[in-house]
Amino acid sequence: MLNRASILRVVSKLLIPPIMVFALYVQFHGDFGPGGGFQAGVIFAAAFILYALIFGVDNARKVAPAWLTRTLLASGLLLYTGVGVVAMMLGGDFLDYSMLATDQKSAQHLGITLIELGVGTTVSGAMITIFLIFDGRLRAEKDD
Amino acid sequence: MSTQLPALQVVLPLLMAPIALIIRNPRFVWMLTLIVTWTTLAISLSLLMQVLDSGTITYRIGGWAAPWGIEYVLDKVGAFVLVIVSAIGSLVMTYARRSVEQEIPAERIYLFYTMFLLCLTGLLGITITGDVFNLFVFLEISSLSSYVMISLGRDRRALTAAYRYLIMGTIGATFYIIGVGLMYMMTGTLNMADLATLMPAIADTRVIQAALAFLTVGICLKLALFPLHLWLPNAYTYAPSMVTAFLAATATKVAVYILIRIIFTVFGGVNVFEILGLQNILMTLAIFAMFAASTIAIYQDNAKRMFAYSSIAQVGYIILGLSFASETGMAAGIIHLFNHAIMKCTIFLGLGCVALRMGGVSIRDMYGLGTRMPWTMAAIVVGGLSLIGIPMTVGFVSKWYLVRAALEADMWPVAVLIVLSSLLAIIYVWRIVEAAYLKPAPENAEPVSEVPLSMLLPLWVMALASIYFGLDATNTLTIALDAADILLNGGLQ
Image 1 (tube, rainbow over the protein chains, first blue to last red):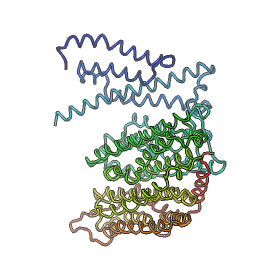
Image 2: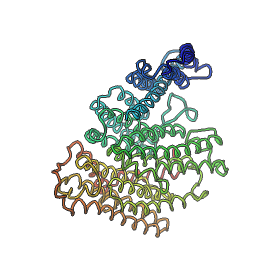
Image 3: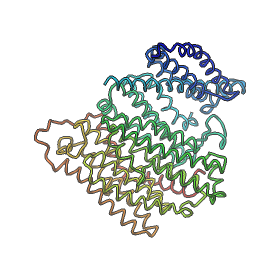
Image 4: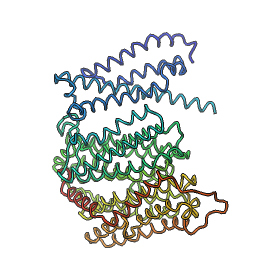
């Protein structure tokens, strides 16, 4: 796409890794400070969308083919409900984290971390899918 | 394990939706969905038994005690609606495979079933939750997935219909959440039972009255009460056949259930009907709905559209029943919830069969079908008779109780209006009968065979149900009367 915009290419190459790391920071620091799965998912997807804007959607699709984003979407929700169901199987109520470990505090910690990871996965999968689908529609209209 | 059933009811379809997304094979996904729907039916039946035996069930999500945590509360009304939703879901799903294969592109079928599972999750969740915000979340899950299901219809107009529903539905949900926000501002709680105890003390404030207004208008948009029904006809007409059957029988019913919960549980300690004149508003609109929508239905050439308008009229009957605020009236509303789900599901499943063989459902497509597809048309006629309220069908039970409620309240003009509006139903049902049995099939008609057994069987289960529950309404009536009694005496306790 923007083949000759070398400043954009260089700057985005520099920026994309820190954006992804920041997404992970927001993800895993979410239970201590501001943040959490939703925000982290959006930031993570933003890094990806930036890549697609600068280096072309075709390249982006190679990195994240449809089956991958679809699996991301599904696996996040599966992880979330899975944690709940595991808690149920261990004898607690649905999403009762205290069943997940013997120590009460680390059980809560583990529970909320997994849940937020599920949220993050699904949200980033959804954001990327929405972006790619919009692009796909534009192409379909151009082809007509 | 039985203590976990309230959560399983909602979690099972929610868990299976992403799995369906990963499996993708249409046949497998359909089988998975079928198993899920029948399992939810089994769960909801056993929950109903539990509730009938030992009273209200509560369940704490994540082990957090109410009112801080999210609580699931299931009383007789809720359990009854759960059974309606899951029974309709499982029958429609048994029916769905052929109809969906014909109407939806093969590469999208797995998405369709995923959306169906999410919609089921939402509808079951709304019914079982005891938390007004959690209810909003489930409302959004069920609405968003139903917009997608509608937009998958073959006709391109399905897209605009779904878009229109999306706009109207979002306004409705927004109004609902504004109402919840105002209540939260005044009480600091989102738990229905907790709200119910705090409400009487602050009911006179402007904020709470504004909240009630927002809630009522928002929910009435969702349940398509006249004149907020504009999204419904197109959405039902252009949606895939089984979606129409499922949504017509469940989505508006669950919305009515939300209205019941808000008015009689959350505002249970306050006489909202007298303070705000809500009774007159609802009753007037209900009667308008009965007449206006039935009259419009008479002039429709597309049978799906005709019965979509008839649905708006029937919602009118349900709301009319509730607006009496007497035990008989409430019971009439609740029992009509059940009865209308059965008869509309019968009719729309039947129309789905017609669509499968004829490719369309206009009145013209049905010429002579009475002899060519005898079983399908007979089932549609049974549904139609029930819609009119002929004795020995479920429709009669509802109408009987509605008239009784009107007479008990000394509103005999209303009773007359109920009977008069039933006459309108005779006219549009007669148009179907006339087309199917009295008009000859077109000269060049290609031979048509009856639909496969997998579709005929669910259709006739529904049709027979509408006769069975018309002949022996003892069980449903007992539940409806009990439910009405609980609701009028303060709800969740």
